[in-house]
Every structure is written in C-alpha cells, then in structure tokens.
Length: 185
Image (tube, rainbow, N blue to C red; front, side):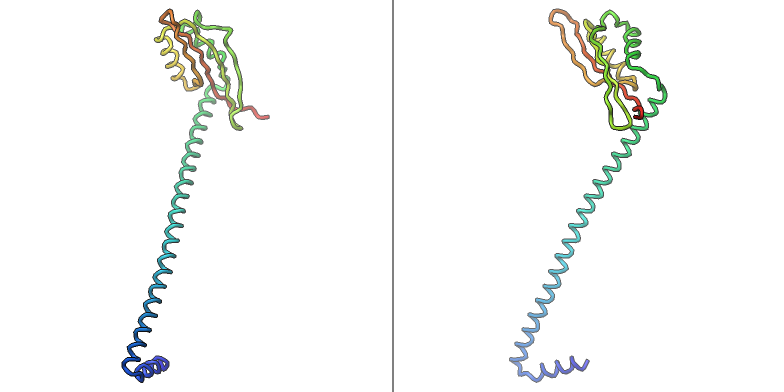
C-alpha cells in the first residue's frame, strides 16, 4: 500500500503537462497490456477450438469404425447361424437338386460345371460352382435368379447372359457361391 501511495505522490509532484504525458504513457501501456492479453486469450481459444474440432472428427471416425465392426459381427453371427442349420450343405448337390426340381435338366450343360474353394479371412471359406444353362426363356431366367436370391445359403457372384440372335431364348452362365466355416489347419 505504501508503494502505491508513493507512486501517487510522485504523480502529483509533476506539473500538469508532465502529469498529462505520464497518464498518456500509462494509458498506452495499459492499452497494449490489455490488447496483448486479449490476443493471447484469443489465440489460445482458437487453438483449443481447433483441437476440439479435431477430437470431434476423430470421435466420429472411431464411432463409425465401431458401428461397422458391430455390423460385421452381426453379419458374421448370422452367417454362422445359417451354417449351423445345415453343417453338411454341399453346393454341388444343391445345384443338382435345384436343376431337377426346376425342370431344367434338358437345358443344363453338365460339361460346364466347375468347382473351387477360396479362403475368406481366417474363419470362412467360399465354395463356388460355375455352370451354364442354355436355351431358356427370359421368364425361366427370372425364376432361376429369384429362387437363388431367395435362398440365403447361396448367393450369385457372377452372371453372364447371352441372347440368341435367331430365337427368343438366352444362354446364361452363373457363378454361385456359398460360405462354410473354415476347417482348422
């Protein structure tokens, strides 16, 4: 308190012109001090806002990844449930019985069948069968495709449709696939 009283006494000891200069200098210093503090707070606040935005973006990214992981786990569980319903499912026998039931044996090209097995990640393998059906109508083709689509055990990987120029018939080449639980090595 004594220091402040001494400063006030020194200011009053100045003449009026000197006192005015002193107050202007003091005001300018005070103004720069306030502006400097304001600038520091402004830039600190801006940096904090940028960090908040970055954290929010990262949070959303992580949330998307977690959501995708949960979806994948649900799909994987659904596939495992389907596979457990019929653990002895064979795509070759399925194809044979389907062709017989649909009455397509006369159109089915036996020589065109090929089978393969591919590894999918560590838990599953994919069994595929490719075959041709020749000389069918577009209605028969739609029936075939819709019945394949309705069966959750198999799925259509590839299809090639060739129209015959002289008739209203078409030939289709299909690649069907199914998934099985990979056997441990």
